[in-house]
Length: 259
Image (tube, rainbow, N blue to C red; front, side, top):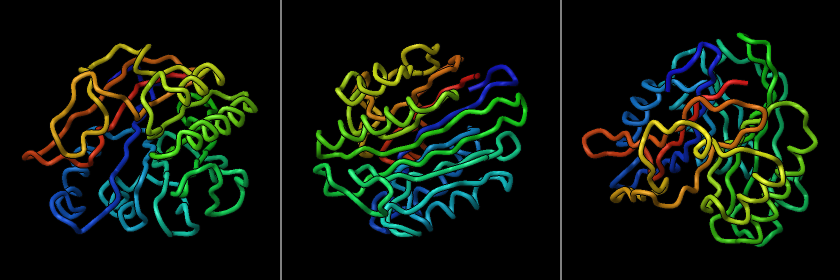
């Protein structure tokens, strides 16, 4: 994912929560994950499903100049995170926040739209140390069961984005294919651009959830990188594996963008 020196390399990756169950335990997947991330070294990595010890492992495996912001969806270090990992040599975090995707977004662990699982969104306002540009990174994980929850979540994110004047990059596992109602709410309602559609594609298209099975060419893209106020230099779906082992049950999606 190379580009001009001002390019930001963005990745969205559902990490698949750490489990000791075989096959595909975290102990087995961790070195593959580390190899992938050390090869790509994204400027911004929006993660989904990561558990606190798992995120600590990833932070340990990345260079020391990486940092991250996140909060367990049940509060503190409890349950899964939608953490944002970033390169501090390039980006300075100026502010951050967490919201729960519910009718009471400030209430830790809340859920109210038909989702049995707690869902949330994490936001960081960054300053680019290279260009001086400020922008907001948004990372989320929509519900896998409730269509109503996905729609209401998309409306919440849309409304918050529309209150912002800075450029935006959104990463997430949306549990819905591109062109779904939630996708339309974000792209049409918040004027976000799907990097996969506008950027030169450097890889073939695959469904982004594979469940450790065969990849599906042109399958559903449920993981997206969306932007507003950015130029997309390239877009990719990364199929890296080592010895037949994938780092996760999702494929990471990537984009090179400039603001």
